[in-house]
Image (cartoon, rainbow, N blue to C red; front, side, top):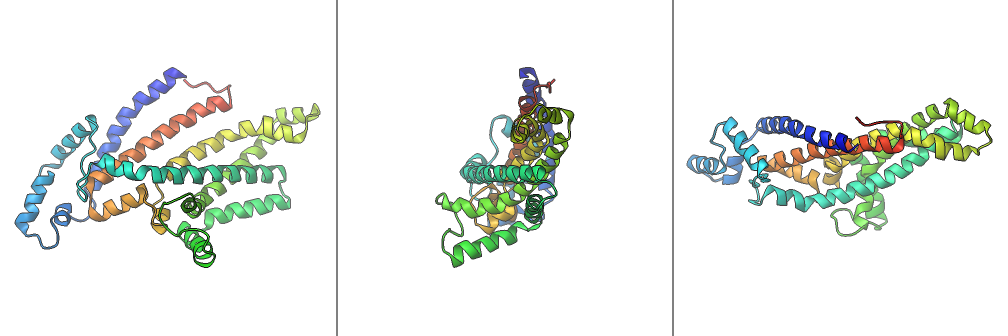
Length: 306
């Protein structure tokens, strides 16, 4: 397994190189001139050209990319055009807010989704199954911005129990995590139900029941472990998406995270911050996929990572 992990880590290098080219190219297609925004609305043409030269935007695109890669190799993500701070500091100051929002959202979503999926599979075609799948379909169908606004209206405006915005205490996590995790919980519930129903039809589960094992033991100890393999794959991808920052949820709740930073950076044409965030998101997905592959072998020892 160690060789597999090392080989995957080395394989990240060409992937990140290709991703950096794509990100660098796509960012340049964003309409607008960052030099004009930095110079201000009253700047003259000469002022704008001076700012462009100061930022290095007057160089050929290929030269700009080479300078960008040289900075990455030195661990330098660049400097924000908007604030003048290093990009690493800009991202670092927002990362923990998004991280805790993601962990809390994924934590309750996985537990609730797993319980609903197991209950629906065990009680299939009964009221528990119908209620669970109705809840799952509702969670997938409801737009996150609408759900967030409804939660704010109920728990913040009418009841006054929870804050509407910001990240001050654990109470600030409740409404954004419910909004962000509702769709994930619904997807996990559907995946768990489908996978567990398939495993429960396998011969070894019927054999375990024929030997006299209690049905709950068969479900939780024998069937669920194998049923979790596709669920883990989907959960890993969802976790990467959430950690990348949900732009809609962070905007609705004025959450000081990476998603909100990305929106502000795009509005200001802050190329270095946009490139740094997108590269971070790509790295997160690669690492999460590696963790998911390793979990395969943990859940099912018959799987050999090569």
